[in-house]
Image (cartoon, rainbow, N blue to C red; front, top):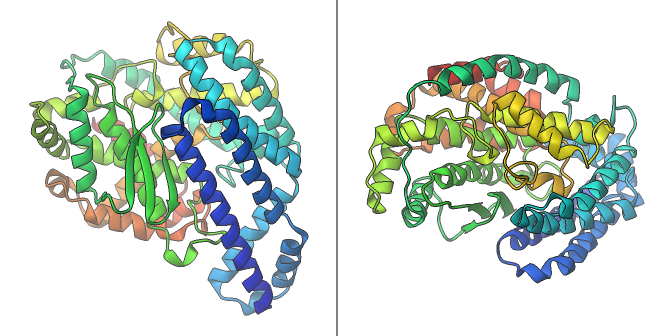
Length: 482
């Protein structure tokens, strides 16, 4: 038995390394790679994916797991969790042919480059064939699995194991009924003109805020990408990006959002590294961490004082009242990543509806732009002037990430639920945030959420941290407090 466990641990470490090299390739593609390198990168990522799949689904892995399944009573709780998750991953990956795994990776890398060019040219027709291919591959992937109510549930399991489309629809139904009238009410109120800092001031303020959070050059990188993201290459190698637009504060919120993702990766218990447990448990929990830092720290009225200080130090005079008003204004808008926290979940409800329809075959790729534009009008009352500002604005479908979008709205809800519990246990954070002190927040999240890695799935970790399952009420209370 110890030999089987040692062999399994060695293989899991190897698989973790291959995955992290994939992260590095993705980071480079989105930040440093010259544009003409795209086709070669797609082939390289496909090779990495094929190697990972072959090593993950090799017969000897099944043999080790069988031996360990018969002797779990002799193992400690950590090793039992390690084996349980390794078994889940093995059984799931074993169902996917190696050629399909490689094709999915190749199409993902190629699709992202095609999307980049199509979005820049505002040319949906240029992107449509790549999207069609990704939809077909997603269906083929979903067909590898049994026991799901539909193909969308099979895809969702990769991002939020244990959640179903029906459960998400139940939760989103509460948001869909409560948010539109709230949006209508809040957006009709008189609003101050937004602050419009130049890019140079934004860059200096972003760097200064991240330094307050503990970001240091020795184990972090901050770069620019067309779509902000975070990826970890190791627990002490965190890569985050933001994007800058003249006269916007989005760059500050995006940087704090991506910091939340990176902090989660960095605070997973060290003994889980290079195992089946050493990652964030789900995309919804990951998004709850980024949304907590974006919404409950970045948009907190007390923290507006810190942001105003850093913008002023960067050469753009600002006061806390104006910063807070800009960051919390409710303005239905076109772009998801720039949306205010009240309208943001409605962007996700639309994407959930559309991608589920694409995968289930009730919506064609050709009809997607029209369905998108109709949905934006229905949910947000916004007319879409171009595909670049509409159906082409997000990178996810270009990479084949179907089932990912719900995590963004679920993350908003979970973040509010966690924040309520955090303040009930630690006390109100107003004074600490006014001083830019986030140490207690980082420590609480590390203890309640981060350290567990994948040992607890989405709803169990929410229940462990807050005492109850997914609940939209704290999020709606949070918005009402604005």
